[in-house]
Length: 261
Image 1 (spheres, rainbow, N blue to C red):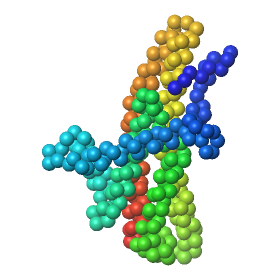
Image 2: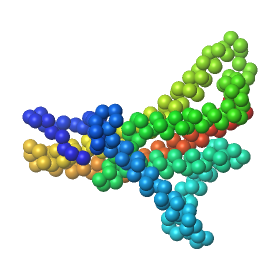
Image 3: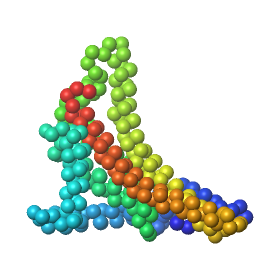
Image 4: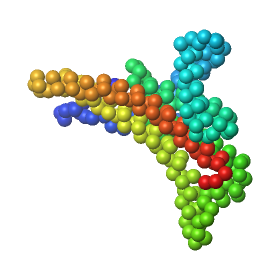
């Protein structure tokens, strides 16, 4: 994080430009810092999972214990509980991969030298959401047929005169509201949290180094304290956002598989 000062105007707060950090090139085809972090997350997760899987023991090591605990949490508390004991197994690889990918990239926000949550860039949650969007529509259409899938959007017993309105609203929900809110929820939470961390860190630095009197310099300690507190809070947010994303994914899949809407 770099201190941003406007000449003659004092402290200049961080803007959304902080989230656009090209490393190679510029414009739409630039290779950016969040792209590098996404590649790094895959380079970390994949070898670790392979390493743990090849060294499974009856008495688990710390790494195996942590991995199995995370897997069981996603499998039982998300997949099995939301999708159902008879249907959940084929979707566990998707849910577990999503959870790890989101969690690791969210935790990058508080790791020194990295300090950037990849999913604060809207393109990444959108890409992940498109996978979810395709999965829950495909499994729904395979289960009910294309016509049956759309037909079940209208609950039975609805008066005929209101059916077109209900169908239109449900169509918007399934094809627009769900994917848009799923992506924006993840992006907005990580974006806002990072912006707060940057404000507290740079604000404290500015007051400490450029404060006009001793009182302002001492007050900078409050800003640094909030930075530390918010850092721990962002760890919790990172876990929660990964959990909420896979929970909603499981809910959408379960809804598409259900016999009745």
